[in-house]
Each structure stands twice: as C-alpha cells, then as structure tokens.
Image: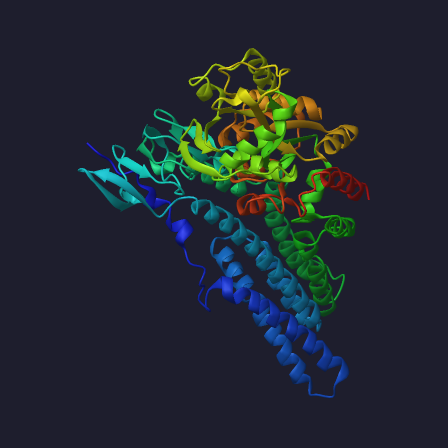
Length: 609
C-alpha cells in the first residue's frame, strides 16, 4: 500500500502572493498613518499661521482623527464586545478627551504615534513571514520518479514513500530519503552548515533542500514532508518567533491592566470629587480629560530611552544593525556567545594549506598536474587548487582526457601520462602510499584538513637521486591539503569576549576532529560538533540553562532555529542567508565578527546610562 507524503499542505505558505488589495489592512493602514500626520501638521499650520476660517483647521483635525483612529476604533469596539478594556480603547478615549478640552492636536498626535507603532509591528511580522517563505524555496516544485519502467514528473504532493525518485546534477532533493542507486556529492550547507560537499552513495541518508552537485542519484523517500529535516527547521523558526520572552508576556498583561486602571480611574475622578463637593463638575471634567490624555501609554508602547536610541545610531555607524532597542538590553545581559563555524568563524570556502610532494623539485609539478585535472571540475576543493596554482604563477598543462569517478576522484591524461586524483582510500586501491605520505596524511587529517592525493604513471623517473620516494614503480606525486579558511579576526573576538567575562561555545555540523582543532586554535571554551539544526536548538537551551542569557551567531538556513531561540540572534550581513538575516535580532553588516564585542560593550554602556 502506498501513501502520499503530503507536502502540498505546507507549500501554500510559500506561494501566497503579496499583491494586497487596496482595501486590505496591509495596504491601507500605512497610508492612513501618512494621512494622519499630514492632516495634523497642516491643521497646526492653518491654525497658527493663516487667517483661514476655524472650520478649516477643524476639518483637518477631523481627518486626522478618522485616519489615525480607523483601526484603533475597530479594535476598541471588538474589545468591548469581548467585555475587556485594552490599550486601543484607552487611546481612542484619550484622543476624544483631548478634543473635548480643545487640544485636538494632542489627540491627533496620540493617534498618529499609536497607529505608527501598529504599522511597524505589522511590518516586523510580515518580514518574519517572508523569512519562513524563503525556506520553502529550498523545495523544488516537482520531482522525477521512476514508475512502471518510465520516468514521470510529478508534483511534490504526489510523491509516495515507495517511489524511486531520480535526482539529476544541479537539482535539489525534494524529500528526505535513502540513496538506492548512484554516487554523487551533495551541498548540505543549508541543512547542516557543512561547507564541503558531502559524498553520497548507496545506503546514505539525504535531506530535502540539499543540492546535488555531480552524479545521478536514485533515492527512496523515508519521511512525510511535514517530518523532513527542512520542515522541522521551518516549524522551529515559526515556533521560536511566536514564543514571547518573559518581559513581553509581562507587558501584555500589564498593558491590559494599565488600560483598565486608567479608564476606570478617569471615570471615578470625573464624578467623585464633584459628588463630595470638592470641585465643580465642569472644571473637574477638564482635569479628568487632561489626566487621561497624559496617562496614554504611547511612551510605554513605542518609545525607547534616549540612551538606547543613541546606542542604535552608534552601533549602525560601527557596522552593527540592531532591529530594536529591546535587543540592546538583551545583549547587555549576555553571559555566553555560541558561534556557528562555517561562514561565521570561517569564510566557508576551502583554501590550500599544505602541498607535500615526493621531493622539493616536484612540488611545482605536483601543483601543475593537480590544477590541470581540477580545472574541469566545479567542486569547491577543485576551485581552491586552481586558485592556489594561479596565485603561485604555476604553468598549468592541458588535459587530454578526463573522467570523474563520483564519490572517489578523477582520472585524466596529462602530457600523455595517466593521472589519478582523489582520496587516499581511492588511490590506495591503485597503489599503496609510501610510509612517508601515509604518515603525513594522518598528521594533516588530525589537524582537521581535507587531504587529496595525486598519482601519475611512472612519476619517479623524473625524480632526483635524493628523492625520498624514488623507486621504479612509484606513481605517487604527493598530497594537497585544504581547510576552510579561518577569519583572521576570529581569534581577536574570542579573546575580547573572554576579557568581557563572556563564555564562548561553537556549534557546528562539522565532524569532531575539525571542530576541536579549530576550537583549540581559537581558544573556544565549549565545542558541540556534528549537530543537526534541531540539535543546535537543544544545545542553545543547554547553554541557556548553564549560563543564562545566550547570544547565537550564524549565517545559514540551518542556524535559523537556533538564532530564533537564542536570547539574542546575531547574523552575518553579507554572507548570511535571507532566513538568517530575517530571524536574527542583530545584523553584522560587513561580516566583521569582531564587532560583536563592540556591540556588547555599547549595550552595557547604554544600560548603565
């Protein structure tokens, strides 16, 4: 019995059009805010600087009230139907009170500020929705499946758990599954954060949203769409963004109680003093309206202290963008910072670190042959070798024949001689590596390097008498090691954070060896390696339980749930994905991670002020 994986239930979120009707709130409310401000300013000008009749200013005031209170009045009526008093009702009553005592400008200003705050809040929510939508773009629109001996194209909603899904080079994986045929290298960076393409063969697990770089794969779906790793990432981001901090929950409760207190207090203030014979009703009513207008919670709702405003401006000049004053306060309380590795502490692209040849004279020859073979490949490791050869001004020969062996290496003909390039495991099926190179290979791997070897037919006939590997049957040219380049400022930011008393952790999808090598080099306190996105979320929770306030720094889709859950999420501006940027609370505009220490110091100063 077959079953559909049901992906169609999720996709409408991503496919919703933004073409809002001119009657919709998203379209109309911002324009009403502009009308409110324009009518207010024009009314003040007419009243103060012209001889026009008073009714002109009054008409402009009426326009400002209608535009500014349009949605607030609707919300107030709705709250009364639910037998509650909320801040919308308080703002409407305060504005009416201001008009009654002849201070319509004050009432219009209250309505403008309040409606502006609602527009800004809606804008932030819509931006969050956009971030969620961009995650769905990692899903392809359709997939090729083998059925009844034919290849048919079906929508994702029609993929069944017993289907054989065909994945061609350059296509994204539509569902989580197991490879049942073929070999390739996948770009899993959106899911795991791993910078290097990951070799996949029969029996290996693949994830929805990852990109097939090379060979053809057949996969068997293992999970329904709502249970894929990518779907879980989307769900976690949504849940983390919807969850409220303790301060937010307190303000939600306080806001309603505050509004009820002011409204009831104003009513009592209107009637009790006159009933006790303390004042006359008319003058007391005026005072009550003044009280309600002054007590309106605009400052509480949309303003931030002057120190925070100054801090936001100073941070922006320093290349750090805060998405609100509240995040400055949160950053000032941070006790630990968790860094993603790839693209954050590193540049996210490999560079050549070591070239080990059979002898010193063969070093350039090794690099030339390797660059010639790799020049035809689009693999990131290949581009690193070609780039390095160009930097060293090495003359690269032509390749006569070329064959990629998915998941293993490359065979080619250069200068009339066969060349093999690939992993040590693959090359040793052709010829055992000399002891010297085996030892060097192990040393480089223990340093967290990615190492490839190069064999060339009858290589040693060119070697000198001093060549350590010289023997008639030796085809080994040597080894080339690569690593994800560490940002030069990474060590500085770790040291700066330690001086500020902030603990540092690293969360990465990379393997333990690579992670611990980098952590040792940079002086990082805690290392969590081999993490999937949901495990990063769990790790952030553990750090929060240990340290308290935790900041998360990342750049990729796989970091988004952790960024959203952390007390403060910090994204890389230039290198970061749209999802990471939208989820984060703070953005480093120029990818300068050393600015994190600057931002924390600035936040602490603002809080002290």
